[in-house]
Every structure is written in structure tokens, then in C-alpha cells.
Length: 146
Image (cartoon, rainbow, N blue to C red; front, side, top):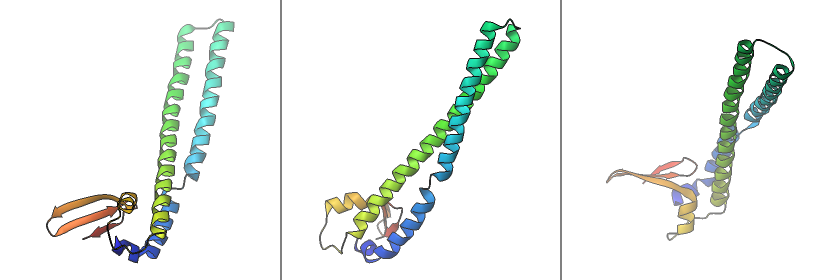
């Protein structure tokens, strides 16, 4: 932990740069808005298709093809919308986690004894590859061999 804290300014700077890249949702939000508009348009088109079929006598085979095509397009667009929404939520969560990590690291000084709160807030997991190869991976992805 002291190795991490001793180099905290450089680590925080690197995390903030990575955070800007990994957690940016602007492009995804634009895509989400576009997909939402497409869903609204497809819903309107489907409703108009149904209303037209109710008002105007037409070939039901052709109507069914047109209706099925609209429903399939809607379903595919909805899947894309949900995938983009999940990515946005994932990036926002990662942004929050990195923010907590940075805040904890900023306020941390060298330690002389084990601090469970600090351990749980900064350490993600430990990998033991052998007696002489133990690695601590922090929540920001930083790995230190101990």
C-alpha cells in the first residue's frame, strides 16, 4: 500500500487521463438519442400501418410482410438501444468507481499498520502465482508485485 501511496500523484494523474477516455459517454449518448428517435419513428410507422389496414382494403399478405418488416426493424433497433444503454451505465459506474478510488488515494498517507477500510476501498484482488510471485491489483487496474 505504501508503494502505491508513495507514487500517488503520478497514479492519480494517469487514472484521470484514463478516466476521461474510458468513461466518456458523449458518443454513446448521441447514439442512444438517435436510436430512441428511430424507435419512435418505427412505432409511428407500425401504428400507421395497422390503422391503414383497418381503413383501407388491401392485400393481407403484403400488409403482413410490411408489418413484420417494421416489427423486425423495431426489435433490432431496440436491442441496439439496450446495448448502448448498458454500455453507458457501465461507463458511468466505472467512472464512479475510479472517482472513489482517486478520492481515497488522495486522502491516504503512508501507513504503519493494516487498515481494513483502506484495504477494501483500494484493493480489487490478489494473485498468488507462487511463493515469490504475489501481485496486488488495485481497483484502478494498477498491479504491484510484492
